[in-house]
Image (cartoon, helix red, strand yellow):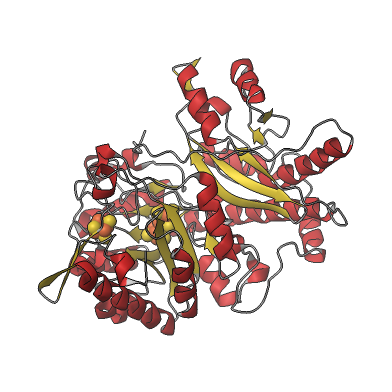
Amino acid sequence: MQQSEELSGGIDAGSQPLDELMQKIADHKGCGSSGGGGKSSCGSSAGQGDLAPEIWEKVKNHPCYSEEAHHHYARMHVAVAPACNIQCNYCNRKYDCANESRPGVVSEKLTPEQAAKKVLAVASTIPQMTVLGIAGPGDPLANPEKTFKTFQLISETAPDIKLCLSTNGLALPDHVDTIKAFNVDHVTITINMVDPDIGAEIYPWVFFNHKRYTGRDAAKILTERQLQGLEMLTERGILCKVNSVMIPGVNDAHLVEVNKAVKSRGAFLHNIMPLISAPEHGTVFGLNGQRGPTAQELKALQDSCEGEMNMMRHCRQCRADAVGLLGEDRSAEFTTEKIMTMDVKYDSETRKAYQQKVEQERQATVAAKNLELATLAGERSDIKILIAVATKGGGRINEHFGHAKEFQVYEVGTDGAKFVGHRRVDLYCQGGYGEEDSIETIIRALNDCTAVFVAKIGHCPKDSLAEAGIEPVDRYALEYIEQSAISYYKEYLDRVRDGEVTHVARGDADIRQGAFISA
Ligand code: CLF
Ligand code: SF4
């Protein structure tokens, strides 16, 4: 398997022996804990040293609950839950639940039995797939029989896979004990408001206790049920993430209040996602011209909430049938037609061995970052820069510019490198040729970045990026991302001091609004 070769090759490639690196990381703790409320200073980048051991066990290979894990571990969703019990103004029922996915392609709906076979097929093909999530295409808890039957089948046949659930929260208090009984250790609730007046602008109706409620009454029921469900889950030790959709002019300023409300009820992580809204989606917000946030508006809100609790910034708003690492979509390899003909053998030993290898590579990544970080000690500067990175996983700069479907964005300063988001783009290289139209959209998406790290890049896009003031950098090809970002930052500070470059604040950037279509 190609990925396996990359992995085993990657551990030694130009890096120090693992033992030596691990000794050095033991001497230097990079990402400190801020104490109080159990919050790490690094948000979802919190590592083993920042979290209580029992929490670390739960998040260490969950790609959504740990930013660091998302470079190495994959998740899959099964679309077993078609119905929904509320209406959101950013949702069109023709598409997946927009609380946990982006509008684009209707998922292939599965029975629990088909879903269980699909999970085994994917787990056998992608050994780093560690989490199964049910996230739609409607609300999993508006379809409790199908949802829990699926969890039951999977826990019987593949007990090493973590179970995960994402809900709008309306029916949550009724199912908390079942969730606990099925060992579902991770639950996401989408909470967009704690003020029913704001809720009335987001939700036209909810269906509760056999009755349809509208306006403020609907939003009041919803917020009460969401917060009650959150409290009940955290009381039972279930790790909760809260998703919030940022809707400029509607709930953007209010999300700071939401952040405080969910933190005080024990939520582990807050994921503020941009509204995806375009007329072609046929949603209320799409049709009335409600815009989504820009990249800098989203980052500013996430930054302002980060003082309060762990923030997730690596969400890809994936589909209800997504498969693979976050940021890749391998769902087309696992259609129902294909999996029904597959002879699946679930080999937990091979999975375990593979994951041990992944773990070594991951530790080497962290160790390399911390070594580089130590070289910044004593450096004083207010300069922070954003660096966009072309990667296909493993925490390395291993993607060609022309093949990148997204760029990961890191903010670098004297305190180190931090993942702050990603930008989805059109492929630059189409059929072997550079696509001139796409370079403009790519530059708009990366406009706030000082540099873009790639494994390789052609002359034309290199020149276009340089003209736009974004430095294309290919000298760190195949190296670790964060280690390289810190090294570049040190050089950048030297160049600024020597007068070779003038540091200027970059402008804003676009978050792409178009539909995501799998390969
Ligand atoms: Fe799926 Fe959600 Fe579980 Fe992750 S996704 S149910 S917590 S396994 Fe993850 Fe996808 Fe974002 Fe969701 S990147 S949309 S946060
Ligand atoms: Fe759509 Fe999800 Fe909202 Fe239901 S909860 S209306 S499926 S976005």
